[in-house]
Amino acid sequence: MEKHASPTVRPLVSTPPAGPLSGVIRVPGDKSISHRSLMFAGLARGRTEITGLLEGEDVLRTADAMRALGATITREADGRWVVEGQGLGALREPEDVLDMGNSGTAARLLAGILASHGMVSVMTGDASLRRRPMKRVTDPLSACGATFVAREGGRLPLCIQGVADPKPLDYRLPVASAQVKSAVLLAGLNASGTTRVEEPSATRDHTENMLRHFGATVHVAPLGERGRVVTLEGRPDLVARDILVPGDPSSAAFVIVAALLVPGSSVTINGVGLNPLRTGLFDSLRDMGADLVIENARVEGGEPVGDITATAGALHAVDVPAARAPSMIDEYPVLAVAAAHASGVSRFRGLEELRVKESDRLSATVALLRVNGVEVEVEGDDMIVHGTGGAVPGGGTVETRMDHRLAMSASVLGLVARAPVRVDDTAFIDTSFPGYLSLMTEIGAEFG
Image 1 (cartoon, helix red, strand yellow):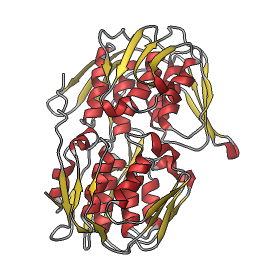
Image 2 (image 1 turned 90 degrees about the vertical axis):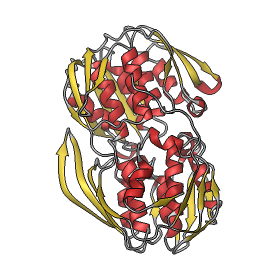
Image 3 (image 1 turned 45 degrees about the vertical axis):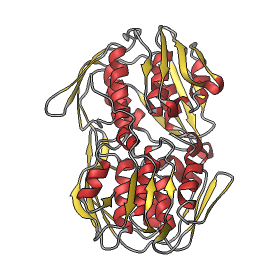
Image 4 (image 1 turned 135 degrees about the vertical axis):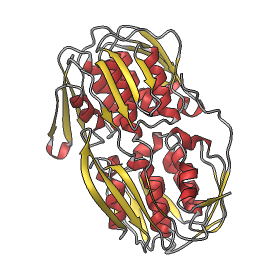
């Protein structure tokens, strides 16, 4: 079994580098696809080989959970991961509590799997995850026949009494969320009949793509102004298929923004996932005048992939529509850093989903900017950032609130600040981006 990182606090000081950032690099595998590849391979019949799996703390928790449910999962010496699945419906009851660490994605998706199998299970997580709401997942999943017992507000630890013969679900998401959609679809896998999910706007579709990859029948259709509907035919014969995990665009985002902001920089990131439901940040940066070039576009493992070169240049303000939020929900903190450095006043609309991430990421992003001298306000679910048109004042200490993306965003801000930016803790970065600080140092960043 893989060892998990100890929660040692690792503060950091970020300052402008002596010169431009440059290099050709790769970022770790896509976290969303890595979680799903382990889960779906564990539900499929036969042997799946996974190449490029993200080996961060969050994904290792998913591997441990699927082992506890009966899948055989091993890491080969060459970095490939091999999963021997027993087939849909063949999971075994776990002998101990499933500890999901800091991973909300793993906990919410796994809830869908556990709800639709006739066994009792208990999930918990670290202090951050135990504060995050699960009712938006457990409420729709209850309709399949499962029973949930949780702390106030539906928070972990969560006891799940699954059902061996679940009912298919028909659910409309009140707020666009790929995690809730995926949990409902995963519960529908083991149900007899058609599970139907309506979403008000399109969210990342890795679940749909991977279910098809393993042999499930999934259809997506527009609902006009009401969004779109995803339907899944229950109880498919899921058969093992190999997976190549692309580089995570959410991880690439921090390197890209750093390269755009530090004068004279040019950095190429090879093999980045370019799923159109994940590239809202790239669209927003281009709207700001960013020099982003994509080359060698191709399809690998059912997902579009390409090589991205980011070259520094002046950026201007942007108005990001609410409809774009689902395609870049994890990237708003680092986009806010770019907006702080740009000229003009930027507005990011429809950010309610940011309130239920690793932290209340909306208020945490506002705090990150304000403590470093950037004017920012919130109006309803909109965030408004007043750009400085150059180096931000800096000089503040950022409270990361156990949120890896806030820590990385703060480290990028310090690269273009007049005074050092202090980050209270970077230990949690490895949950999603192992080796982030060393990779940034490799291309020219300087951290103390």
